[in-house]
Length: 490
Image (tube, rainbow, N blue to C red; front, side, top):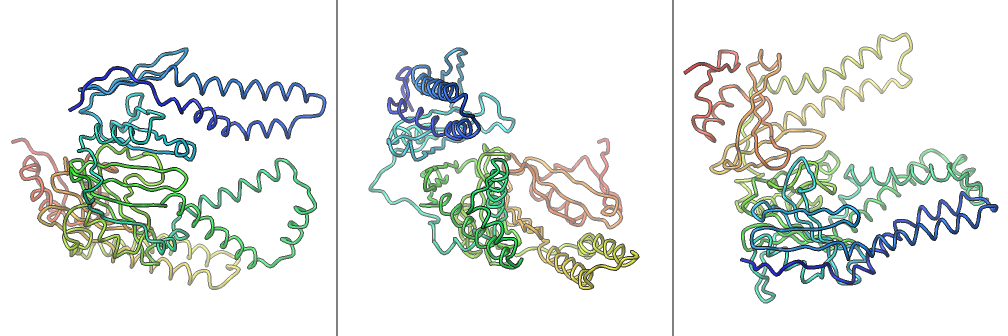
C-alpha cells in the first residue's frame, strides 16, 4: 500500500518548538534556584542557570539532527540518540494504534506528534514509536496510512456518533478523579507556602480570617473551588469532543483545548463496550461509555483507557455504547438482565451489612459511648442502602451476539462483550460460594482489563453460558452437586 521513500527527518519547525517547550519545563527549577540562593553567590547562580538553559537548548536542537524515520512497505523504523544510538523497528502488521497529539506550541506551528503503538501490555522500547513532531497534514496522512484507512474526503459526510454538549459539564464535579486533582492542587499550594515560609501581610491576614471563619464557610469555599476546578479540567480535556465512525468500522475520537488529541480505534479490534456509573455520577443520572479494544494497555496513558466520551446523561451514554457496538440499545447495555439466585442476593446483603454490624457492635460495647448517638443508625442505614443497590445492580444476559454483565455499587459497571471476543474462561469459588452453589465466572479477553466477571451466578447457569459461547470447551470437566469443578480423564 505504500512505497519506501527512504529515511526522513522531522519537520524543521521542531528546532523552535522543542527548545521552547524544554525551557518552559525548566522554569520552575530556575525559579527555585533564584529564590533559595543568597546574595553572595549571585554570580554562580546566574552562571549555573545560563549554563543549564544553554544545555537544554542544545539538547532540543540536537534531536532534529539525530532523529530520522522511515515508513516502509512492511516496517516502520525510527533512529534516535546522540551519544547512544537507538534503532527501533516495528512490523506494520503489529501496529494497533496511531494517535495524534498537539500541545499549544505544536499547534502554534502547525505540528503534531504521532504515537505508533503495538499494544504490548508489558511496555518496552518497541511498545511505542513517537514521531515528535511532523506537519499536521503529514501526521493525518501517516495515521491513515498506518491504520490502513482510505484517504479522507472532505466532501464525504462522516458518520457521527457523539458530539460535546456543554450541559454535560454538570457531571464534572461528580467524578472522583476531578475532585482528586483539585485536592492535590490545594495540598500542593499549602505545602509550597509552608516550604518557602510565606509571611506576607496578605497571607497572614488570610490565615487569621480563616481561623475566625465558621467551619461551614470553609467547606463552602472548598466545595466551590472543587466545582470550578473540575469544570476547568473538563473543558480542557473534552473541548471539541467528537466521536465519528471510520471507513473500516472503527472509531475516531477528537478532543482537547490546549492539547489536541486524536485517538483511533480499529473496528476489527473492538471486543465490546463498558458503561461506568460512579455513585455520584449515577445519582446525577449520568454514565460514561468506554470501548474494549485490543491494543490498548490496561494501565494506558491518560485518565481512562478506552474512554470514548466524558460523563454524560445516562440515556445518551446508552446510545453512544450502542452506536459503538453497531447494535440496538436492547442488544447492548440496556439488555434485559437475568436475576441471580436467592443465595446471591443473601450474599450481597451479608457482605454489605455484615462488616458494618461488627463495627457498630464494637462502638456500642465500648465503655465510652459514641459522641454522636446518630452515628450507628447512619452507618447501618447507609450499609443497607448500598447492599440493596448492589443487589439491584447484579445481573447478566446472553444475547445473540454478546454477553452482558452488570455489578457494583460504588461504581456500577455494565459490560457488553462480544461472543467472539471471549478467548477463555476462569471459574472461581470461595468457601461460602461453594456452600451456596455459586460461581464467579470470568470471561477472558484480549481487550481492556483482560477478564470480566459474572458475579455469584449459579453453577449450572455458569456452565450453560460457557457452553453457549464456546461449545465443547468444558467437555473434560464435570461438576459435582455443590458446583465444584474437577478435571476427569477422557
